[in-house]
Image (cartoon, rainbow, N blue to C red; front, top):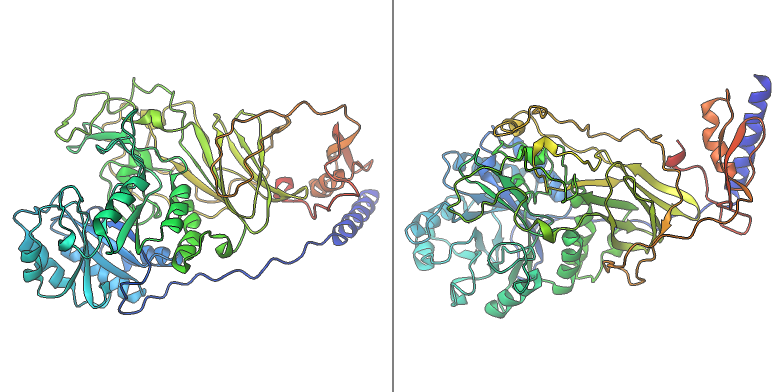
Length: 596
């Protein structure tokens, strides 16, 4: 025992000396991100909004139930919630709570009338009165003294009648369609809802019928002329309601790397306003807010349970700061190294027809219901999407299931790649100079079985460093089993929003090297290539603790292996090859998290 203790002490001294001789320099001071709203906004201010569905929060009992959302949104730079309202009996109660919470949390809100429920041809007066009801509250967003109001669709609304009923100056920023409302004199701004590549008819792109989000930008800007444009941005779209509800619908728009690429478009476009679709629309899978934001279950929990999206908030934060500053890239607003990743829970080839909830007939008066795989599924890629937010350049290593590891160089700033997805665990690592800076295994595997028996085309979003994520509560899970054709799925979260074990075993096969394009912020479409087999082993390049030695020696043994030296006694070599570090290279520092 004394000999082991002496060996441990000696190895510790050697490791510390090696590390101390190669101490890295300190990082630059992070650029703070602030969100300070003046009581009255100018038409020249750049503002970010998030679409918030009031229709699914009828279970909230006080304004305190909104504080969590307000604080989360404010922390990433969102200025106001667009409160989407229908004609539910609890609408006014919930609007009162939301306005009160917003004022307490230095946020702004405004009403967005959902004309799926309101009627533009007969309810212009009602719309004006609703605007007037909340116009004087402290949290109401105003532009140049005018009460800001918006909508989802609503072409044909008698704007003059609405204004007369409101009795206040209204800043009108509705989701009118330029082709249906040619006269832009009825608006002060306009919101384009179509935030996803599409076919021009509210479905995924098709051969010969493909329109980008930028095409919509151009159409709205041409219609508005000098008036400010409210640009949309959304990370995803997937909905899968079957005959168990009256609003059956089943289709996707291609999301993939849209959240990243669209933020870069926003920085180039520089619109006056940006609206995120959405904060909490779980039914269409484009929520960026947390799962534990209090809400009821309209049936979405079948594909939302265990599928957090909070990493998308982290990705948006530096982009929002850059947008408000008029910067062309977010690099100056990245305060720490982060990796944001997302993927679907299964490959799109997985056949779930035998148990999927949409294989039966349902009401299709909307034209949005399709049986089996969601309409447009072919436009989505079987890939793991990775965005790195780095202070300095590094190498990203991704291992998707049983696929060979893929390693690529990531520059400083924001950078995106897509990796072919494989069934199994998903592992991510950031390496600099041979040192593991960040590493971790996703809490959710990619599976070869149908989750809850259905086609689930929602995305799981994770992040490194790991941050705890929220889970659905009992009210958010109330309809999970309704309509299911399997009995193995229960209304309870199965993922715990805490970090997975750090000592998850790493794969032993050699990594593939992927050389992405050298231009930052460009999405690579290059195929993955496999590196040639390693040369003939010459030195120890992987070792571990010797039998019966204390596990506390693991970090030191792995660290010293970088020198190609396996100290006899405390350590033993279990792999031979080219050492990962030599005297001519920068020292890797202390053992990283992959060695814990």
